[in-house]
Length: 293
Ligand code: GUN
Image 1 (cartoon, helix red, strand yellow):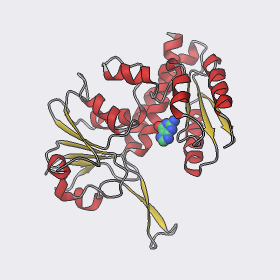
Image 2 (image 1 turned 90 degrees about the vertical axis):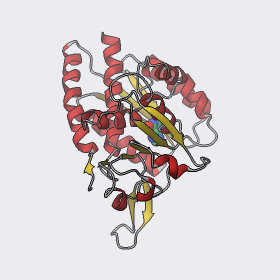
Image 3 (image 1 turned 180 degrees about the vertical axis):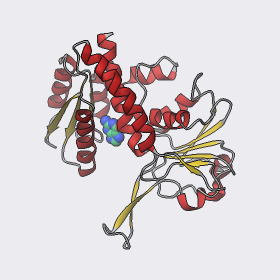
C-alpha cells in the first residue's frame, strides 16, 4: 500500500476560505479582528514564525501588531506589555512567542495573559476548559491535526490513537482532545514518550499514530501497523550535503519507509506545518466573535 498524502496547504486553504467570510461578517458589524504577537530577543526561527503570522493576518484583512522587544527585556517590562495588550480593545487575541530568554519566567507570563485573548490556548484556565470538554480555544497545532483528520474524512470514533510525545504544546493537549466526546474525537488514547517501555509494541497497535517527539525519523515502518493513519508533527533540520542549503527538514517519521505501510500520511514539510498558523488565525477570529457576539 502507498499512503494517501494529507497536505496542510490544501486543508488550510479550505479553512482560510471560511475564515475570510467570518472576518467579512465581523467587519460588517464594525469590528476588524486584531492579533498581536510579542517576540522577545532575536531567535532566528522565532523571527520567521512571527513574520509569517503577521503576513497571514494582513492577507486575511485582519489587524496585525508585531511587538519586538530586546533580549534584555525584564520580566516586569514584558508583564507591562501583556497588561497593555490585555487592555487594548483593538487587539482581540495575542501571544508571546516561546521560547523566552532564560531570565524570564514563562509560566508567570502565560498566567498574566487574559484568558479571553489567549489564542495559543496556553493559559491554565484554557487548558482546563479544554480538558473538561468546554473549550473557548483549542491549541493551534493539535487543533490543526484534528482538522486534517476530519477534513480528510478519517473516522476517529472508537479508534486507538497513540500520541508519541508529551509536550504541553502538542502531545498532552492532542491526547486530551482525541479522548473527548464528539467529531474528530471519541478515541481510545495512549500517550508514549521517551521513558515508555515497549514503545514500538504500542505504536504498532495504533489505528492513528500522531508523532511529536522531536527526534528525526524516530518512527520506522516496523513500528507502524498496516493501514495506520500517520500524522507527523516533527520538524527537524538535519545536515544534508547534497542539498543546496547543506541541510533539510525531516519529520519524526521515516517518511520513505512508513508511506509504504500507512493508509494516510502527512509529509514534512507540507503536512501539519501550515495548519498551526491557520488555527491560530481561527482562534483570533473566534476571540473577536466572542466580543462582538
Ligand atoms: N513557539 C513554538 N510554537 C509556538 C506556539 O505555538 N506559540 C508560541 N507562543 N510560541 C511557540
